[in-house]
Image (cartoon, rainbow, N blue to C red):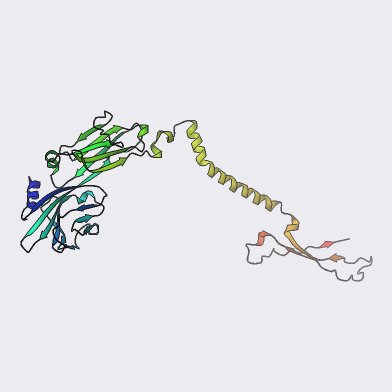
Length: 328
C-alpha cells in the first residue's frame, strides 16, 4: 500500500501524463525518453525515486546537479532523454521528466526503469560435472511493483538455452519463481558437455522480448575430473615432476662446489709461482779455511701468486719466506 501511495504521488500534479516501462540488463547503457515537445532542454527537469518518499533532482532546467550520486554516469540527450551509462541494479526506480510551459504549467513523463541481473547461487562452491548448479535471475523494479508488473501487465521471466528453446518443459531443469514473481531460479545437475554452455534469462511480454541476460558455465581446470590427482602412481609421478627443477638445482650447486674444491687441491705449482727471477751469485770469495771450502750459495727471488691472499689487505708476518740451498 505504501508503495502504491508513493507511485500515485509521483503521477499527480501534472497537466499531462504518460507511463512507460523500460527494461535493461545489468551493465548496459540505457536511454529514458522524455517525450520532448520543446526545441531545447532548458525547461526540462529529471527527478528520481527508488521507492521511498524522497525524490532526488538529477537535472534542473537542463543543468545537471553536482551533489548527486552516479553523476558521472548521467547525461542528457539532444531530445532531453536521460542517458545512463553502464546501468546497475541500484539504478532501478521511478524517473520523471518534467517540462515546463510556464511557471505553473508543466507536463510529466513517468518512466520506470527495471534492471535484469543473473548470478550463480551464493552457496555455489564448485562448478564441475556431477555437481548441482543454481542460477538466479532477478528483475529489480521500482518499489513494490513486482506483482502488478507480472500479473496485471503480464510480463514473464523465461529461461532458454543457446538455441532459444524454453527450458521450462525440460525435466532436467527445475525452474521456480518467488512469490512476487521477480526472481526465477534454474537448478540442474551439471554434465560434462555443459562446459561453456550458455543459458539465458529473458523478460518477455507475449512474444516480445524486452531484455535478457546470458550466463556461460565454465569449468575451471582445477575442478575438472581429468586434472584431479588420485592416490597411487599418478600422484607420485606428479610430485616428482614438480620436484625435478629443485633436484636439478641442488645437483648443479653440489657439482660446482666439488669442482672448486678439487681445483684448489690439484693446482699446478707452476700456476702458483707466477715468476721466478734468478739472482746472479756474488763472486766466489777466496777459501776461508784450511780445506779450501768456500760458500757456494745461489739466491733467487720467488713471487707467489695465489687466491689465498686476494682477500687480505695487509701484509702478514708469514707472507715472506726466504729459501736457501747449500751444496757441500
